[in-house]
Every structure is written in C-alpha cells, then in structure tokens.
Image (cartoon, rainbow, N blue to C red; front, side, top):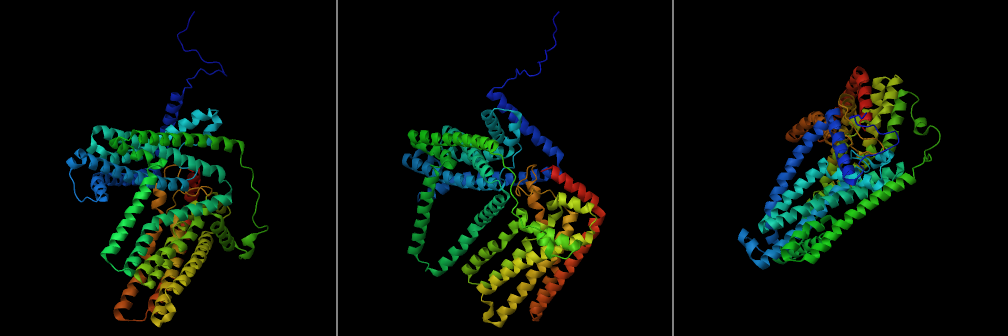
Length: 593
C-alpha cells in the first residue's frame, strides 16, 4: 500500500538543495525578513526611515542636477565656455575629449564618495549590518557559500539600493553619447557599487579582526571620529587659509592665472590616479568605450573584478582567523583598590560622582567629547587668522560648552544595567542627579577653561583693558553654558531617554536607529539656547545703554547656577515618578543592541 503523503527524512540525513544560488536566495530572504521584523519591533526605526527618506530624496535631486551640469563642467575644464548637444555627439575630437573629462571627473568623485562611505563604515566597525558572519558560522554553513551569501545580502539591502539609484542617476549623463554608451555606464555604475561594498566590508572585517582589546578600540574610535571631524571641517579651514592667502597676495591677472593652473593641474593628477584605483576605475570605462580604447576597458574591468575577488578572500580569511584565534580574557590593568572612589566623599553623592568620573575616563562614547576643544580651537583659529579678528577665538570655549552636553543628556541609557542596579539600591533621586551634574560641570568646566586660556593667549587679550574685559565676559558666558547644561542634561536624561549604542561599539546602530541617535542629542542644545535668553536680553540692554560689560558676565553666571539647580530639582522629581518606566526603557534598549 502506497501513500501519497511526503516522506519524512530520518534524523541525521539531509537532502536539501545546497547549491550556491539557493544559498544566495536564502540569505537575501533572511536579510529582508530580519529588516521587516526590526521595523515592526521598534518605533525608532520609523523615525530613522523618515529621516533617511528625506535625505535620500535630497541626494537623488542633487545627483540629477549634477548629471545635468556634467557636460558644461567638462567643457569648462577643456577651456570651452558653451556648447550644444550636437557638438558633444558629432564632433569627433571634442566628443572624445569631453568623454575623457567626464570619465576623470566621475572617477575622482566616485573615489571621494567611496572613502567617505568607508569612513562611516569604520565608525560602525563590526556592526551596522543585520547579518553577522560570526553568528551565522554557528550553523555549520560552508565558509565560501556563507560569505558569498552575506555579500549578496549586503548588495540587496537598503543602503546598496539607495547607492545604486544615485549612481544610475549620475550615469544617465552619458545619454548624450547614445543609448549604447548609457547602458555601458549603467553596468559600470552597478559594478562600482559592488566594488564599494566589497572593499568597505573587507576593511571593516580587517579592523574588527585585529582591533579587539578595549584599549585599542577606545584609541581607534577616538582616531576615527577625530579624522571624520577634521575631514568634515576641512573645507572651512581651507577656505579660511585661502582667504588669508588671497588677502596677502596682490590680486593680479598673473596671480589668478597661476592659481587656476595649479588647481587644474592638481585636479587632473588626482583624477588620473583615481581612474586607476578600484573605487573609481569602473566609472571611467564609458569614456574609454567612446574613445575606442578597449584594451584599457578590459584592464579596468580586471582591476574591479580582482578587487572584489580579493575582498571576498580577505573576508573569509578574517572569519577563519577569528574562529581560530578566539579572544581570551584580558588581564586587568586598572588600579588596585578603590581607585577614584577613595578620593570622593563617603556617601551616595560621592559614589555617583566617582562612577560618573570612571565613565568619562573609560567610556569611548563620552571620551569623544575631549576631541571637541581641539577641533573648535583649530576651526576658530583658522577663521581668526583669515579675517584678522583674533577675538573670534573666544567662540571656541562657548561652542565646546554647548556641545559637551549632548551625550550627557542621555546618561540613563548610557548607564544601562548599572542604572538598574542603582535603582535597586534605593539611591535617592536628587543625590543621583546632583552627583551626575557635578561630574559633568567639573569636567566640562575644565575643558572650557583650557579653551579660554588658549583663546586668551592667541587673541592677545592682555594688550588693552577692553580686550581683557571682553575675555572675562566670554569666559563667564562659556561657564554659564557649562552650568546650565549640567542641570538641563540631567532633566532630559530622565525625561527623553533614547536608544544608544553599547560601550564596546559606540557608533553601532544595529536596529536602524541611527536617525534617532543623530537627532535627539541636539534637543539639549536647543533647550540650552532657550535658557540663555536672560543673558541675551541683558546683553542687548548693556550694549544699547552703555553699561559695564561685567554685568553680562555676572548675569550669565547667576543664570547658569539657577538653571542648573532648577534642572537638577526637576530631574529628581521626574526620576522619582518615572523610575520604573526608566528601568523598563533601559532593559528594552539593551535588548535592541
């Protein structure tokens, strides 16, 4: 008697389809299943999606306008002012020359964009992806198939789809050379995306493999964020020094011509180099197709394909290396005894102060604040040098005081599990908030005073009484921001906690909450602007009535003390009323990491 029911496989036997195509489809389906689950599990993902959608619309519009402006930009580099579509497509020599200019421009831009993406990937080292190779290795999947499947899932995720759309829009500029060249450009754009994803993933895998200790991670995050801030501010610094140079050099025709020649030469050299690098080689291939240089086309295709193959091999090597060289327990290098706890008052407030100081010393999420004095001093110094107004340096301590409260305004979520234990120990709310405010005020105040000292020396404020008086007023205003932020941050921490990354990976946003993590820290800065209203009103009165400038400084200090006390008092009330909700929120945040 036969049965039409499907036969069950005996335990231990596998007759499953294990082909590479099935593996790729499975990983892609798993990627999107996890993405949909994350979207349903957290409302923060919706916030991130809305912010990301707005930014992507702006990016697509910018790519469209760049594609429209590319012909005129290329002809400008060739020394031509205007042209027509017929000129581009029919004149042989000009057609090839303009195509080569397009290819060089796109290769340079593609390389710059890839390096920016790589920098973001380094900030999100070892995370930011739904699929994790180390976790999937527990299922006994073949290394090669698993790595290819994960790589295919990366290429079908939201970031890759968005990048592909932007590259295709930019590549549509090749339509002036015919439909065939445009199709080649589209294929090269997708190949460029594959190279980007492969090389960025490879470098991230290398970083995650070799930077594993807590100390090395802390140094790594500080260096990467410092590099990111410097690159972001590099245009302002260069423009400032460029303005200073132009003010020192006579504005003659020869000088302008020499400057233009230097810029053009540097641009041409950088473009030529980038057109042979894997990040931008594929974007220049359509230009060689137009010129009939098919040997170079094959060579650049080989460079791109070899880069992808090398990246996949390196990622598999990193996976196997990590598996064979598991990280052992790290020896403790901390000080023996009570450490900083022995140097604070023996009460609840002293314990909170010591714990907060330890966080500032060892938590890379808070240690990043120590980069702000250096960054703002460099930026304000460049602007002061370019304009000749050295008093601009006094904006640095004010900005440092303003920005250093961002992370502290979410200290409940930053604490995580220790906050739960502290709640169980029945520490009074006002003592907890007061201790955190003291730590924040002392550390931020020291950073601000260092900035004030540098600004005092650079601006040569001791040369006359008025400059010295202005220096004192700016110092008082900066300290008032420190005091006000110390209290306001405690109130916002218990009123509006939001998910944050773990201490091991301070930039990670595994569940798609990067939009919320980037938006909410600025709430404390906006609130600080509001509480600065009394000082601003007194400043207007002093300047219009001709009163002494010290009135502004005294008002700022008094205002800072009052708002600090008010913030701590309100924070204690809110914390007592919402302590159970805060514990639940911290637990949820920990489960989302």
